Image (tube, rainbow, N blue to C red; front, side):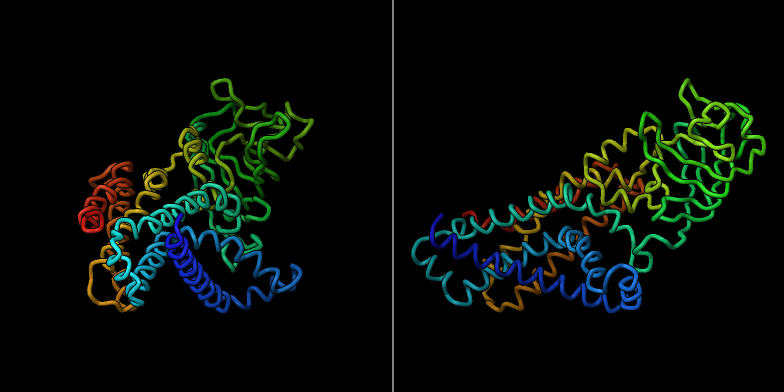
Length: 379
């Protein structure tokens, strides 16, 4: 690595961090003041106002970087080139026989590194903090009642619903489990006062523990029910060692997060978890989630395409204004997001495009455009 490479990379990193810190700081200030009353209230309960702020926004900084990484790399690269033009350093370099291809090489490597870091952030960091990301400031502690959108367990054909959900306890208030097919002697509905989600543990399957069962009234005398040899409804009649007479346990691979948060929770899952979820017979992720999964693979390439789209605008123009460079960058970003959003919307609705094509179509459209615009750089 030459002295010039190190100089240009330092400039790129400085602009990248300055833009990121400015954008994150602005986001935190605006959001925090908008939810100030809630944070003060949580601070009284959870050990201080600053502790609550740190806990809340520590999860949102990785999320913010995930959404802004492509834009940050583009702005840093364009500002670095514009700065070289402003100080006439670019003219001196080209007069010395250094080609534009050689000049932009360290910037392209830096942008590629940013896209790799963003991908690692999506796969490793965000999934670890998604429980915080699905909660807003109004329900940061997960104690507020949220509406339950019924979800069908496709394996058992049971519709899971209820009056409200409470994230902190993983509880459904007044749950109603509707059986679309007969299971033992349990009729068509299971109704209780509360249902608590329990993960698989100690050789027991995962599912929902129903407490205060009211329908069927004679549930304590009914044996457990199975479907194709697999237990589905467990009762105290033959599981008295861990179930009380007023309890039932419904085995399900639909987790509380799938029920209470749905696609919002899956948006923060890793690619491995999405692939595993697609093979879960209990769930149907829908077209939107399938588009998102395919988009995970193409996103680093799209980030690099966005970067290459922006560089020629500052390398081939005559105006050396930093603000003009910023304006051109914004125009490129608007066009980029318009194309990607339109394609993904069509894939999510099943209109004209399959999920895989919807994810790859922006690259198919934008990559040739980037190659054509950047042709003078490589000559």
